[in-house]
Length: 258
Image (cartoon, rainbow, N blue to C red; front, side, top):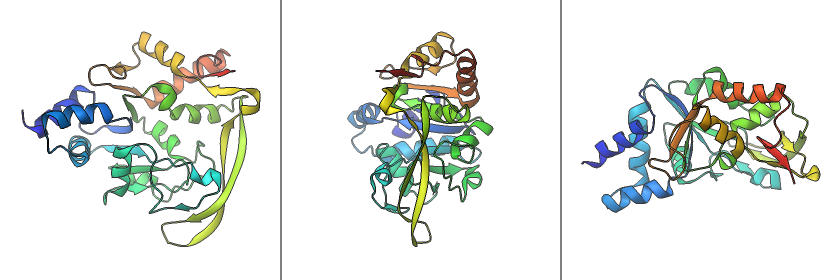
């Protein structure tokens, strides 16, 4: 089978459809080497372009391009600060057709139909209703996760936590030097709704994922099984969290104390 056809079949069998709006969290290492073993000339370019070909022009893809150096006092440079979310996200960040949102910690590279909805988005609070996460919910993006467990990927959880102002998190400010897309350096302050580390709070949402599988809300394959891709719509995850928030059952599903 030709590489192009094989890649198309991979995405389609993973649940990606023409015109989807997706937020993609990925660990491509395993599947990359599967394709590389069969096709010696296979490159990340092929991975990226095959996904773009399926989803665009009607759909949208959001790649997380998070980088946490700003929190440690290092300069954020809009064009030069790399994504730390894996090689596919860094490739997307560098693409001429992508637009990177402006938050120095939780930025996304957006490609496709709804890209304009993210223009100029410089949310002060990482996960707030002014952030890309709100747009993911409003447009009901399909959250797709490749070969990662929820603890390592489900950042949308933090939007839910901030939305409902959970008691095990609080606001903390971070300030530093920031070079924006206009190439001007500024001193800027942002804030995160962070864990109460002094109370032993850790993110622990894999138990929630098991329930999502049991209820058949998660669809696709578990990490490292078959294609390794699963998906859930943002509204489904939000409503699932909301249910457990109002039943006071978040602990040991989404977080725990150690």
